[in-house]
Image (cartoon, rainbow, N blue to C red):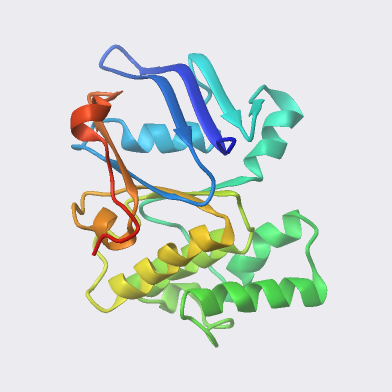
Length: 229
């Protein structure tokens, strides 16, 4: 199966203090991947590169078999990938307004827009909150609305930067249930986390970063089988 995302001989430097360097990395469609490692290891930088928000200093990012170039091609490829930041920002309007924004940019309007928004909110367990004001949401609700706003665009790849950090006990299982369902819909999920048990709960593959480099596959990259508890 062709990878949905690939990195080849990628390097990105942030001043003289930090360099992310990855020789070869493939992400397969419909799987969950976890980026683990200490603060400053390069997890957020890698997510921004995968989201095509940063251009690498050298090397290639390949989306569904096509190398990313500049200009309009890059913009079209970015529509296949959505990044949700660690502290997601919601617009000062209703929940519906937040989810409709990206759809309007893609010229999705009318009944189709309403159906997709309703489906995305149902998927994250927030039916009926369409017209609540975004500032009135709790922290857990804000995270789930941000996830729904990403899901409504139906990306092939969903990137999440510490999406469950600080979630309360009630919100965490709801959020993880949403994530666990996405690969069945063909979405590849790549998320950073400090929760060592999360990869087991969601049956994902762990990629560990240390000082901007992936650690050796034999020791620090482990695959959890579908039967893991």
